[in-house]
Length: 177
Image (cartoon, rainbow, N blue to C red; front, side, top):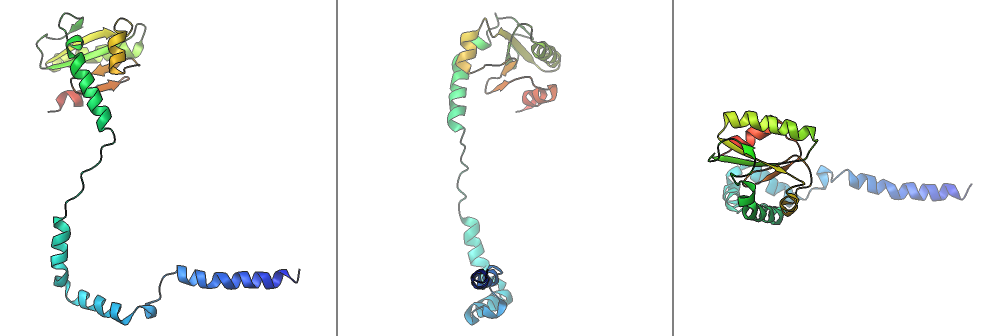
């Protein structure tokens, strides 16, 4: 037990300088040169104007989009599949020459798919919208080519939405420029 007391005292003694250093530099330890520079800049803020201008002119690096390859692949697949997705001879509703087109992939006995059809039918009355209905089992090759594995899935000319979507989300996509 007596041997532990000196070891504990040594341990605490070693920690004491670390805790003082962790608190940061004390004001009186600031160098006289650093203090003089600080005072000069505080009294003459216009000295920093050229530096601020240089910083503002620096080009910001372009943001990195980690999904750009996936997006390019999806857009390429959509372009290749467009004739099979929006063929006016396929079942669907809305005017065949509509400005907006959606292909809706569904499955039999799918309550969410029935709701998606009803929502899109209501939207086609408000928007110039043609909806093509595609059964995932009958069009399995097309769904696979697009990477669609769930129903309902909505396919626009430039994007795909997997899973049921609220009407407000669909309206937002249909209203975009």
